Image 1 (cartoon, helix red, strand yellow):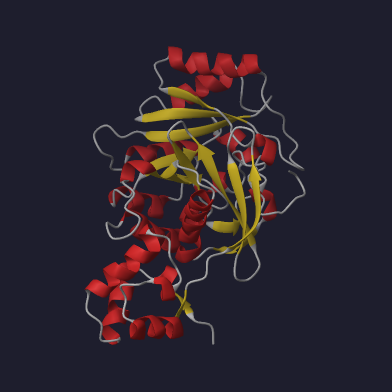
Image 2: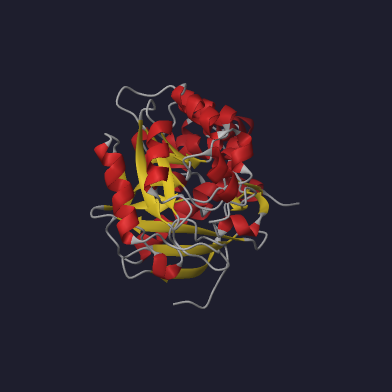
Length: 349
């Protein structure tokens, strides 16, 4: 019979297990410190844990990290990992370099069920959800890689923008967030943790009410008609005007804004008319707009926008008083940019 992964346990679950084993409460903090702060998953190396308990844990739990089966490094410093899970399924996670730190893009599912037509992950379909431990192990693997390669930059930001729709795997994502935010765990603040979603109402409201992090919404269209064309399944969850009205009801901190993600696709949603419609749609929403140039992927029949159209779109929104950023797509040369993750090992170097 397969052992339970200790990486899947919440603090409270491990606390209960230690109580059953007759161990004092502080053992939980010691074990969590080894795993989530130091990245040590080998029980035999947990030197301040009694040998008898280490042997017990080894009989009760597994603590296996995914196997790193491929690493690609982009010219801009982006690092993409292909990780093989215990059932041999492949996921990808990406380290995006900033001047003083890395942002890690986390996957929450193997594939995705939404099938957005501009997204390579969406073309895979959904294979399965990730467990909370499989989500968290991506961070441990990346931290270990940086340490082993003498890279001084730390991972400061976590964004659930990799493979999958995180709110369609909400129970496991929520459990992972518990470890990410916990003071005895990874101890990331809400300001450095972001969930990206197409808009799944109930878990999104729970995330917002729990003050668990920042919110990014994959809108990508100024109208229901265009959203139905490029995001057919997501557009049926909530009609676009209903979605924006719902976003207005989310509880937020005084200076917090929702990030609206908008991928510019040539000839589809990049016209001044689209910019005008988007401005009207978002006129009463406390938000900032993150424009993203479409990143072509294998088998995706769309094109990147012209630079003059991107500039005109951005300037129009800024002139109307919107807070706008144009995301610089990193990792394109290794298929690690937005919408390019496929969970597929290639021979590309």
